[in-house]
Image (cartoon, rainbow, N blue to C red; front, side, top):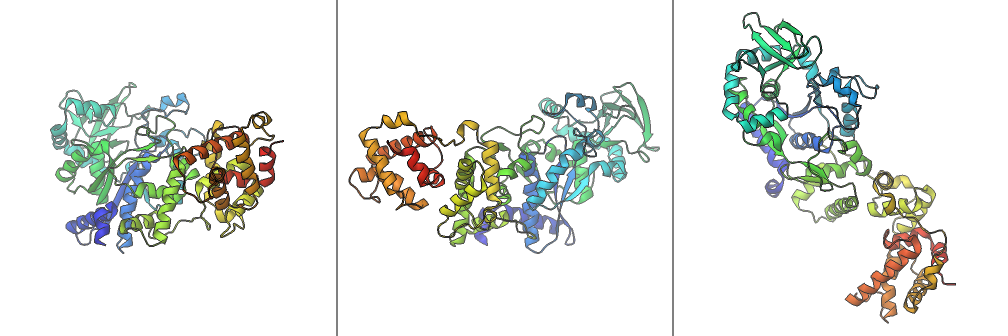
Length: 555
């Protein structure tokens, strides 16, 4: 167990959370928190906000302790901008709460639910259980009323804390992110940590002009021209600004662990300020905390849900098995960046995942590798489904590419490929087979798809050199004897060896490797009219001996 602790970030984080809980009170509940604003597609970068606390909470539960993982939906936040790909007409709703903006497809209750629903389904598929909290419900029900009044009565103290970290550079970044420092009134000294939504236009383009502590009544004016007021002890038409809202919730929910992106984790950032505010204003303690790095795709920069095109967990789960997607988040420390591959690198991801599985099965895995594999396969309460018969992803992708998804042909080929344990039906290869099908049809460019020739390339066959003619004859003569995946692998690599007077299993010299590459290029040209393609043994097995002879035989 000591070896696991040294290299396992989840174990180390869980230890800290348990210690923090004991430090607060032996009976203190352990609460891991996540927060997401459903302002646009919830992408794979947002998923890390969930997965880091999920793994920590799950580790705590595996130790027999109770731990709640809450997901605060920041659905009472303003709509900041319209994400790419959605109608520009929704710009009229900028400034309104996400739950007050119509659903862009007209099928859900509101804008926020439009983006929550697919994310919920993805979390269920990933085996992630959370307790959801809608900030719209919390604010509009008056649940935070005392906290709001407390913040307003302590606004000078809050402003002083913010002032410790406020610089022109930090303020510019803060304004750009629309993490408002507060409401400005008639003079620069009037600071208010509360932002009302306008009763007329519904937007937060408002500024408080006065607050009476006895009656709790505020007055505000809006950029739309409307002026109004209400008593905070009775009305619920607004919310605390972000840097005050976050620490208020830490105290309210008793949060013992939370993770945050690097933009919230730097000196003078939201977490630093919040840690001061929760102690000095709300009488609570900051949670144990981990900052996490960005998630990119194929080397791309930080994802942005409003920039358009950022893959979502739903997108990823079309091509990555749920345990593999969990593994991508579990194997990296939070401060390490993650890259999720949707291109040819997806083959390498599956190869690495399968290699880990074989290592574990053989009893050769290190303690940390065992722990990562276990938490990737499911949670303390649920093991995720996997294929009954695990076949290499690149093999499945090659087969569905060659057969264009024809199930009868696919089963024939896969049955020939699995000589040790013949595949009796395709369901035994699912869900991985379905992932391979989705990847080939959705992510492999058309020019990279395999198109097997329907007629021999007679012009190229007539131009064959004597060496090339001999190579094709040796290949065709050996098909029947070597008709299996290992056999064909030995044959296609061995033809140049036979031509050199060597045995099939002779070690490859640099000269032989050059001859092998030349043969492979020739075979691809004659079979698929390209210089490259699927692994040749798989391609040959997929085509069948008769079709190979038709395409390669010299008249």
